[in-house]
Amino acid sequence: MAASISGDDDQPMSDINVTPFVDIILVVLIIFMVTTPIIMKPSINVNLPKAASGEQTNPTQLSITITAVGQIVVNGTVVTEGDVGNLAKELIAKNPDVQALISADKDVPHGKVIGVIDAVKSAGVTRFAISIEKK
Image (cartoon, rainbow, N blue to C red; front, side, top):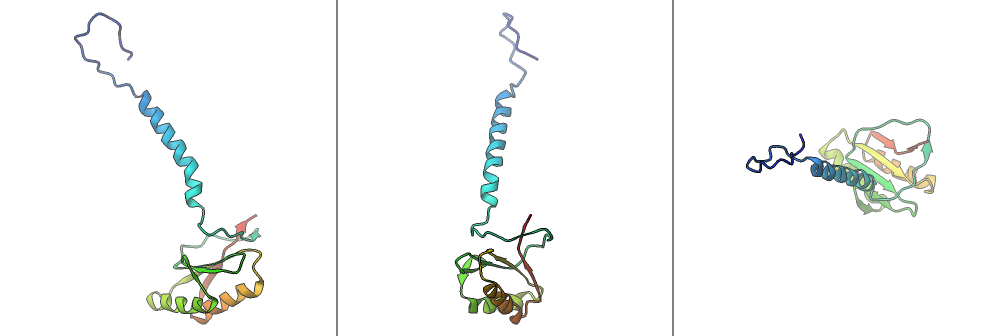
């Protein structure tokens, strides 16, 4: 109900104007829509290879990323190829059902990826997945 312009000023206004509230909520919604893709982007920029087949996996406790320059990052920590097996053994001791997720840049030599897979499997991890980007 709109406010009346009558001379009766003794009555308090009983309606709440929600237009400013709706404007603020719409602005907040737009801010969230713009910032969410930035927040969700992984902090390590890896150009994953594309493949038509692939499936989503559950979150993992052992996330291994190999960058284009050959740097190995395990759970956010830069390590050498020899340390990958030691970190995997530590996680296996805590949880024997650890799954490793390997994300390698498409420009990384095949031998480097195989070396990391071998280190993970030698540590006792039986389940691993290779991260791809859908075509």
